[in-house]
Each structure stands twice: as structure tokens, then as C-alpha cells.
Amino acid sequence: MDPTTDALSLLLNALKEHPRGMSVSDLAAAVGINRNTVSRYLDVLLVSGQVEMETYGKAKVFYLSQRVPIAAMLNFSSDLVLVLDRDRRIVQANDAVCTFAGKNRDDILEKSIEASPLAAFDHPLIRSRITDALNGREVTEELRFLRQDEELFFRIKFLPTVFNDGAPGVTIILEDITEGRRAEEALRESEMLFRSLVENINDLILNVDETCTFTYVSPKSRDILGYAPEEMLQKTPCDFMAPEKAERVREQFAGLFADPKPRVLFEWTMLHKNGSAVILEVSGTPIYDLIGDFTGYRVVCRDVTERLRAAKRVAQWKSFLYSVVNNIPSMVFVREVEGNTFVFSNRAAEVFLGMTQEEIVGKRATDLFPQEMAAFFADGDREMLERSTAPEKKVRLPTGTSLSMKKVPVFNSRGVLKYMLGIAEDITDRTTAEALLVAERDRAQGYLDAAGVMIAVIEADGTIDLVNRRGGEILGYAEKDLAGKNWFATVVPEHLRDRLAQNFAHLVDGGIEPPPIEESPVITRDGRERPIRWRNALLRDADGKVVAMVSSGEVVQEQSDRTAEGPVGPVRTSLPGS
Image (cartoon, rainbow, N blue to C red; front, side):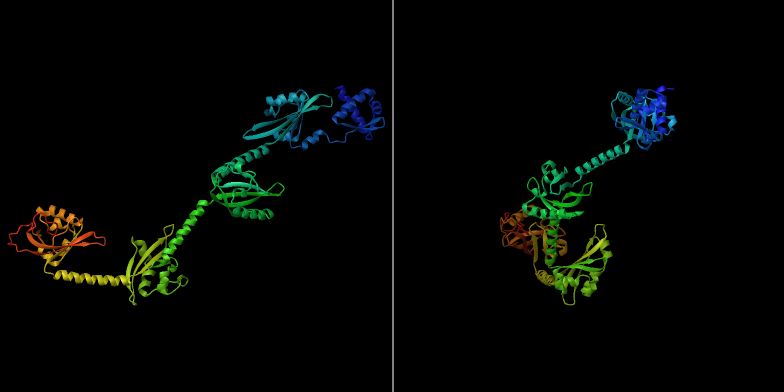
């Protein structure tokens, strides 16, 4: 047995029997060792913490230490604690080490690290730091440790240690910082995600402190306002606004700072670097520090300039369309298909029905219209879906009013029939005028048919607009068979066709005038030529442009010896036999 250890044990036993303490002389007498040697051993026990000393005048009194043994203290620690001697053997290991290794303390103690269940920590860096600690230098390192599929991180402290006998050793404390590292990694990933999100979303992110000064500006400021973030930092929103807009924003922030509120929504008009106005839809959220004190607002700004301009254009366009619809002479009704009630009517409809729009809305067709109109506007929704054209109908009301009615289907974005647009036009005057026109036409046609001569109307492009009944008899055609055909290709003999067509073209251009009387043949349906004596007159529009020629002709006696070119010769003009 080591004599030093025996002597220390004797001293400790003696102090245990005298809890009130003993002087150096008392201890020397009790254990039978000279006073100087006892004094030296007591210094070792003091250094190791096993005894305590108090001084009374010149006397020194020694007691057993009342402190908890270090081994017991180490077991309270959640850190892994190892104590190595100068030969790198493990002489102490706390409970955390045993739990980590999954072994009993006896399986760990008195073994070197490389031969113990902690062999995974036998790393060149650790061996080097143990040597440093044995040489009296305290060192701290961080180490990554892989165990099966798990990655762990430790902060390792190497502390120089002195044993009871004065021999050097090393205390190794391994602090598990895995959760902290994972939290830091998660924070870094979160920051990267946040930075990526902030840099790529279309919104501008701003942080303002209690003085309304920008403390953060996202890179989107370049796209939205033309400023780099650093150009806006330490400035206020009002520095980028027209004076009349800035005053209102100052008032807004004064209220928000006095009484912070979440999810604040308002609108800013800021000035782009080029001077143009940028309208921002702003959402603000209060920011608080770790102890809950209000520090400012985080503001998300969305550029709605184009959207608001588009909405304004749409509103203007709607207003324009409403004005047009409300002021056209035709009546306009809109019926909601689902409820079968009317939801809109224009001013002409109000006048026709003698009701205001408010009185019309919510009513059905049978509540508003005469029977003839109600039947058309109330039904036929399925018919509108099946037909490719809008249904139309003309009715004459008992009052004598004539109406032209039309129904137009209106679908929603999903293709479902939502509304029926009804249009009704008062055509009483037009119907009367058309009837008069038809009567006049019939009367004129009667005059033409009663005439004993052939009458033809030739349009400027050479097509036949009209040939009366006598003309059809002479040519051998029904009247309807000639309308729309080319005069020269149909009734002019082939040997005269080109020359007379050219003369007619000059006449239409206004270059020549037709003679009052001329003779020229026509060819009948059966191929016979018949000589005709013509009288021609031009029809002109309001600008004096020739639009047609009216010619009347009578058959010349066929035994006549006159030539087909007539008495004027080959310079004769145009038509129908010029």
C-alpha cells in the first residue's frame, strides 16, 4: 500500500473522531507522525477539498470538509464528465456518461478511452487536447459525433486537474449542443427561406421603428419604387411622398403608434424614383421585442397601380355603356333566369311602361307587358340555348304600336345561362313608311307594266336592276329571270358587246352623254336579233355621280333596211343599244 495514502487515511480518520477540529500538533500526536510531515499532508487534503481550516490567533484548526463529494456533484450534471489520470485512464465517469455509453460504471472505469465503450471519442484532436490539459492548459473545442443514423454535436472542455497525491489529471466535460445546433441550422434555413421569399415575392416588405424610420427594406424596392434598399434605409415613408399625401400618412402612423393594432390596412401613394406615382395597398403588423415591448411595424406593400387604373377604366367603360344603353331609343330589359324576374331596364323601357326602374325590378313579364310581349319575354330559355341565333319576333299591340323584339342569352363564367337580355324597338313609323313604300312601288310597277314600251334600268356596273313586263315579252324572259344579270352579256348581240360595254363605262365615268334617241338591236332568249329605238336618261346621286341609266325602247319594224349601228354611225355611245 502507498505510505502517503495510508498517512492521509490516518489523518482523515482522526478528524472524523474529533468533529470540533484538531490542530497540527494534536493530529501529529494522534497518528504518530512528525509535525512537519502532518502539515504537508494537510496541505494536500486542503487542496483536494477533503478538509477545511480555520485560524484562531496563531493556531490553525482542521475539520473534515462539509462539502458534497465531487463524484456526487458530477452525477447531478446533465453534461458528460470524465476524469482521466496521467496515463489517460478513466478514473471517474458520471451517470450521464454511463447513460450515453449504455454501460455500467465498472465497464468504463480504469480503462483508457480507446479501450472503453467511449472508443468513438478516441480522436486525434481529443488526444492532442488531453496532452495540453495534462500540461496545464485549459482548452475548449466543438466536435461532431456520428452515432448510427444520428448526428450529435458536443462542446468539449479539457480542464487540468490535480489528484490528492498531487498527480496531474484531466477532467473532460462534454456539453451536448445538438439541439442548439439543430435550432441554429433551422434558424439559418428559416432565414434563407425568408430571404428567398422576401426577395422573390412581388410585394415590398418594410420595417419601420417607433419614429417611422425604415429599419429594413426588401430588394423589391428596386422594381416597385426604383430605389435600392440602402437608399431608403433611415428614411421615412413620407420622404417618398407628395406633401399632401405625406401629411395623411403621418396622422395614420401617429394613431397606430399610440394604439398598435394588428392587420392594419390602408393605401399609400409613393413616388417612384422617376417621379411617377405608385399606388400601394399596405398591410401593417406590429413588431414586439423579446420582453413584449412594441418596437414598430412590419409593412407589406403591394403595387396596385395598374389594377386600380384598370378598375377605373372598367368603371368608366361601364359608365359609358350604361349611358349608351340608358339613352338609346330601343327598350332594354334584363331578366334573371333563375328567379324569372327583371333586374334592369333602361329609360326607354320606363317611358314605354310608365314605371320607374325601381318599380320594374323584381317583377315578372306577366306583371309588366301586354300579353303578346309577355309570352315572348317570359319563356323560351331552353330555346335560346338550343338556337345559334337570338330569337326575334314582330308584334302589333292593340294600341296600334308595332314592336320588333329580340332575346339574347347571357352566360356566366361557367357557361351557365344567367340572364336574358330583351330588346324591343318601336317600329310603328318604320312599318307605316314601309307600307307606303310598298304601295308606291306597286303603283310604279303598275305604271311600268302598263307602258306599251320596254323599260330597263341598268346599274353603273352593268347589271340589270329592272325590266318591265313589256321588256320581258320582247326579250322572251320572265321579269325575275333578268334581275341581277349583266345587260351586255345577256341581251346585247356578241358582235356589239365589247364596244357598247366600253361606251357605257365612259358614260358612267361622266366622259360622254347619251344621245336622246338611237337604235340598237337586242338578242332575245331564242337567239333572234330585234332592232330597238332607245331613249336614254342618266340617274345621279346627291354628288352628281352616275348610279344607273333608265332606257325605254320600242321595236322597230323588222323590214327596215337601217343598220344595227343606227344613223349616227360607229361613234354611238352606250346602251341599251347605243
